[in-house]
Image (cartoon, rainbow, N blue to C red; front, side, top):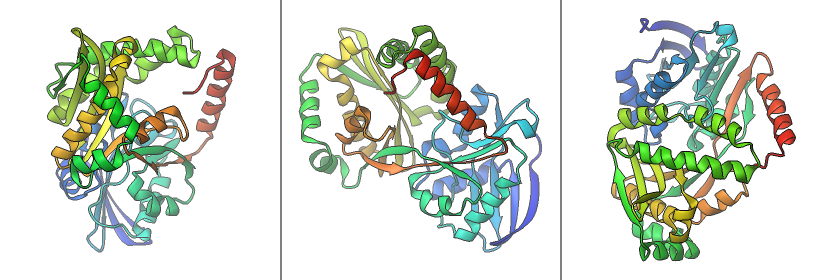
Length: 360
């Protein structure tokens, strides 16, 4: 790894000292103090990106005159000239990045961070914000376009008894009680032992998703395994250790459904789910897994359970709402020297029309 570079810049918030890559000890310190730090905002998550994708550590530590410090997790594309590369927090499919800071950031400090990012030579610079950050950060990102995203989160305040009685929907509680009476066995693995079983279900799910979306199976397999290869799951399970839990439902000795939950500090996140519909659906295995994972997060002292991104008004969003998940804006802020994202969207839209693709 190259030695960190240090910069001193004049900003609306006064002089700011920037170190890149951010020192790991400082990053971990701030992540431990910031109550809103997500599992995807830690150095371990960046290591997973760099180990399984064409990325290098480009994180930035900002130190302002008033003593405020914040880390912006960031990766850059390897093996590309900077002017043709990207620097993002995070790339698509890697979830929420954004600043890690235990104290409230002033608008001037947030503006200084985006002014610094705007000076980067990369073709595209992107930051995916946490719901808690958008009020300050999105309002000062001059020159950055806003790409809307929605994430759904369950408030765990009051413990599982409160969540079950007051936030789970009546229909969902009925489904879960039915699952508890069925012939399904559940186990949780925090060692990575169940990685192969999960990926087996993931590959089965690809077939179902392809049918639902009217997508050629070969294209679906190529696309899905490229964006989520087995090596990525292995890396995450190995690096996060007991911060990565694989919840597996078995029926007649066969894997029926599974969910992966990541955890850091006061936050738990449903990262991936998969199932064999013929085995899982009759016994309502997936609602049972979600219920157990939420209860486990409550017992671990988590304040929120992030159920991931959903399209507003979709059946998936409605399903998550049954667990008491509320919708929050979590936008991606983008600055591009050329309109590559718009061109990519047009190309994807044209291909979808050609194959009569149905968005979920």
